[in-house]
Length: 275
Image 1 (cartoon, rainbow, N blue to C red):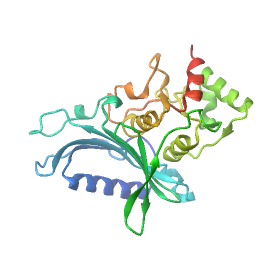
Image 2: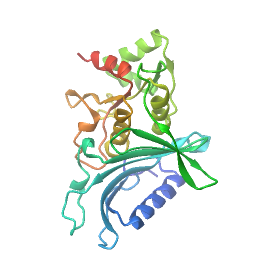
Image 3: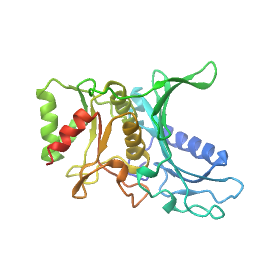
C-alpha cells in the first residue's frame, strides 16, 4: 500500500495515524488536521469539538526503518486558524508560510522517548520518564556556535541526480575530513544535527524537482526548530531562486520542498556555490 504522498505504508503507520487523529479530534482545540497518511485534510465539523488550531503532522516519520529497529519519530506544526470561528476551517487556514507557525516539534522514539519543541522563542528538549508518565525538561537546545562537529548527512544514492553545487559541496566535505552520517529517518538525522552540529541535506534533483520531503509536516517544523536553535535553513535553488524554507508558500497540503539545514558554517558554504 502507498499513502497520499506515495510512500509505502506499514501497519504501524496506520496505527500511529489513528492515534494522532483520534487524540487531536478529542482535544477540543483543533479545527483542521493534515496527516501524511490522509489524502485530504480532516475538517472538524462538530462545533462542540472544534477549536482554533490547525495541525499538520507526520504520525510516524522513518517508518521504513521499523523492521530493523532504527529510531523513528513524529513531526508536527501548529497554526492558529484565520477563518471565522463560527464556521468550519478551510484548507486556506493551513496553506500558509512556515513563518506563521506558532508551535513546531517532534518526538523521537529511540533509546529514550524525547520531545523537542519550539513556541517561537528558543527550543526546549524533554525526555519521557516512564515512572511518572510525564515528559521532564532536559535542556534548551542550541546548535554549537562554531558549527560543531564536521558531519554531513544526505542520501548519496541520489548523487547522480543532484545539481552541480550540491555535488561540489559533498565532494568538498569528503576532501576536508567531514564524517558521513545518514540514518534515513529525518527525525534522527535532524536531532543529531541540532545536538552535534553539521548539515542535513535532502535537495531537489532531476528526479524530484521539488525535493522529496513534505513542506507542512517535515520542512516547516524542522526549519523552525533549526532556526530557533541558532541554525540556518534553506531550500537551495528552488523555483529559480535561493530561498528560506519557512517562506515557501504551499499550494497543496502534501507539497514538497528541498531541504538544506544545519549550522551557519556549513549551510552558507552550500549557498555560496550557487552564486
